[in-house]
Every structure is written in structure tokens, then in C-alpha cells.
Image 1 (cartoon, rainbow, N blue to C red):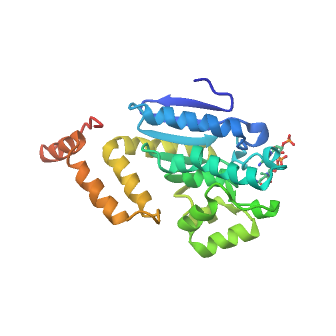
Image 2: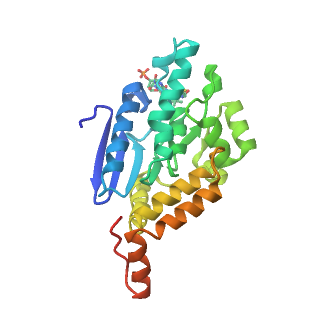
Image 3: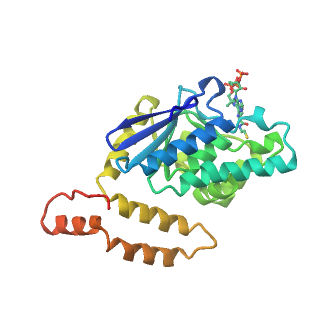
Length: 260
Ligand code: COA
């Protein structure tokens, strides 16, 4: 499929999705959300792809939020639908993807931009990155999972402060809060993310998918995370990856996981 608002680069088992609306600071309009859904779906179904990195084009922004021009005149009903559809197509979709997703935050990650970064399985930021949920300054609240994922990552008090003050934190503060795992000079950001991705590709993709499900279950009030973990642990014993991983260890060689 050809995309107008994003582009994809593949390097071995690692795919990088770049959101490409630099003139609008990569703001998420409806078309971009739909393209991102399609891209994540296709890459997740591609068994050659083991890790996905998502970033923004240009040096200024990862994503400066949902596209305000598209929803400024929405009704109550349309507002609710916007949040529901966005969560289903992109934010929950990414959080529950079976392929690991790394958010490479190369600049402003505001509103829906930070919510997209928080949907990724973990995040790395460049030194110039600035993050925040400024929605209450627009008379609305975060609607793409921000009120849930921000407290999970930084704790309730810091999340409340960030949401209520609508202010941004810089990359170092985000690191201190646990919102991002590393901070790098901008020119090193993608290479560093690809190095991390490479490390992930050395491991069993089947086991990683089970681990993503088990970790996510712990944040789902309707699920019992420990029970999901037990079930996922057991399932691993039926995989070719488990046979290869344990055999390789016992034979003192590097595992070559078949990914099944
Ligand atoms: N939705 C739609 N357009 C956006 C946008 C958004 N969330 N964020 C930025 N843009 C557009 C601007 O309207 C501007 O377009 P124009 O050149 O056609 O006027 C362009 O991107 C550049 O932004 P600009 O505001 O001129 O850049 P800046 O360097 O002065 O400020 C920000 C950068 C990020 C501080 C500022 O753009 C901003 O506050 N954006 C909105 C952030 C926000 O509230 N996001 C949450 C949305 S729910």
C-alpha cells in the first residue's frame, strides 16, 4: 500500500515508520491515523519483521498532537467517537501489537503525540524532545489513553500535575520520571533505537509476544495478570523457539530461533 502521510523503511528484521507531515509538526489527522493503523497491521503480519520503530520527520516534532483543525467544531457525540475510534485503530492497537514497538521521540510529543509514544512498548527520546498533555488548555482532556497510560508510567501525582498544568517536561525530566528509557543527541536517536531493536531480534519473537500480552494483562482491570502469565508461560513450552532456545543453551551455541 502507498501512504501519503507516513513512510516505512525496512532494514533486515527492523521496520521504521516515520510520520511525515513536518509542516503541521506531524499532527495526527484522521488520514494519518488510518495509515498508521494499516502500516502497523501489515508490519505485524509480516513474519520477517521483528521490531517496529516509530518516529516523526524533521528535527522539531515527533507528533504535536491530534490535528486540532479537524475536531474544533465537533459535537459531544463526535468527540466521543473520535476518542473511541482513535483508541481502537491506533493507540490500543499499538499497545497490544504482537510485534515490539519502540517510540523514538525526536522532538515535541504533545497530546495525541505523547499518547502515541506511551502506547509504544517503550520509548527513547532525543535531547531536544518536549513532552506533555496540553489538552486542558484547549478545554478538553486527553482522549487517546493519556489519563490511563501517563499515571501507569510516571505515577499518579506527576501525571495529575502534568495534565492539570498542561505544561511540558523536557527529555531529562521525562527520563527522571520514567517516561522514557534513554535520552540521546538527536543525530544518534535512530541508530540507538535500531541497536536496541537488534538486541530484541536475537531473542524468541514468540516468547516476546507472550511477554507483551502478560505485561499488558497486568494493566487490564478485567484480566488477572498472574493467571495470564501462567498460561503464557505454559504455551511457550509448545513452541519451536523454546526447543531451539533450550537446545542451544545446552549445546553451548547461539540460538537460531525459527519464530514459531
Ligand atoms: N494540530 C494541528 N496543527 C498543528 C498542531 C496540532 N496539534 N500542532 C502544530 N500545528 C501546526 C500549526 O498550526 C502550524 O501550522 P501553520 O504553519 O499552517 O500555521 C504548524 O503546525 C507549525 O506550528 P507552530 O505553532 O507555528 O510552531 P511553533 O514552533 O510556534 O509551536 C508547538 C510549536 C508544538 C508549541 C505548537 O505548535 C503547539 O502548541 N501545538 C499544539 C499542541 C497541542 O495542543 N496538542 C494537543 C492537541 S489535542
